[in-house]
Length: 255
Image (spheres, rainbow, N blue to C red):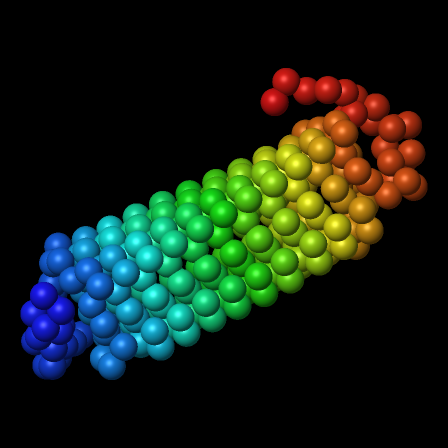
């Protein structure tokens, strides 16, 4: 079986890979490590647990592909289309994902440590439990994305669109959220110690039971526009001012 898979892979890539069209093909557990896959069309292909470590997949078409448990460590996926692809448990450590299309894809429990997602389209993407340590998400579009339970330690989310995103139970210590759009985002129980929030938009954001101690650039004006501050942990100076001017923000909500 392994030999057959290897032969199939070689036949696919030995000629002009940019014109290859092998949609819906079953190539699970294949090793693509030696190949150049620029522009390859692998839409809806079964590539479960395949190895793409260090491979150049720039502009590849992987829409709807099954990439569960696949290894993309240090791979180049710049401009690739992975819309609605399944990448659950995949390894994307230090991968180049600049301006990648991952809309509505499943990246549950995925390793994205040190990955570059600058300008990526991540609308409604499921990142539940993913690891984003030191990842770059500057100017990425995470509108309505699910980031519940993710690790974003030392990640860069400057100017990132997080409008309506689910960030419940997210660990955001030391994260750069300067000029990020967090309108209507769910930050319930999120850990935001020492985050950078200069000019971040917090309008109607849910900060119930969140920890915001020692946050940088956080103003009274920003917090006055949130949905709720019920049971939120804030620095004492801000807490006193807010309770005096906006006591309604500290009332218990019904979700």
